[in-house]
Image (cartoon, rainbow over all chains, first blue to last red; front, side):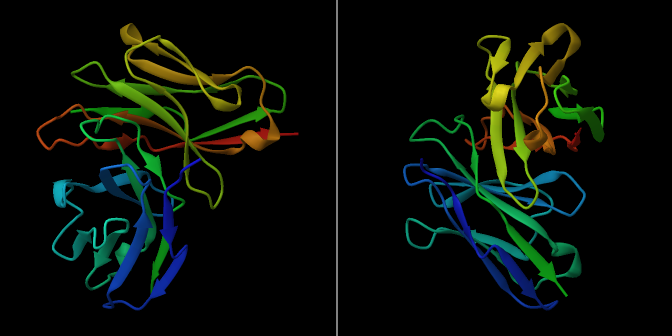
Length: 116
Length: 117
């Protein structure tokens, strides 16, 4: 069964460093998402992406964050200068064939980001 | 705006007894609702979904949920708990806005289910 994969599973970085979290969505999906879950809190929407541009972003997704689909298979989340409060589990999700953004979202296993 | 409220942060049941995890939603449209499960150090797995078809939805691992519009509820149930059901459960509502062309999920705060031997 196709699945969303994410790398790395765990990333440790120093405050102020840039990190790139990688995701490989399900191959025929066209809609991509990032969510995050701070330890002990609920999962929060960060951004959605379609047709090589951001469709929607939350207030969390400030100028320090960016997303990209560099090569037609990977979907990345970059945090330019990490802060302690960026420590969280980051989930990638994908959904939908062409014209079907309402299909359920499939989630990857997550990347745990620890900022020291 | 859509939202979901999970009424219990922790639920403990004995193995073999019924499970009830409560979720209430708020939506100005007919909502699409989901239950996801997260086992320790694992990702989010879809248990079941309601998308305006049958109000009683059956999912994986013996779970089911009933959409009750009059009560704005979507409670998750299972007749007999198993040790492997111990996990965090999230009720999710999907936004209905089409302006962006995509849909986002709004998660509840989660219910941690503990199953006692």
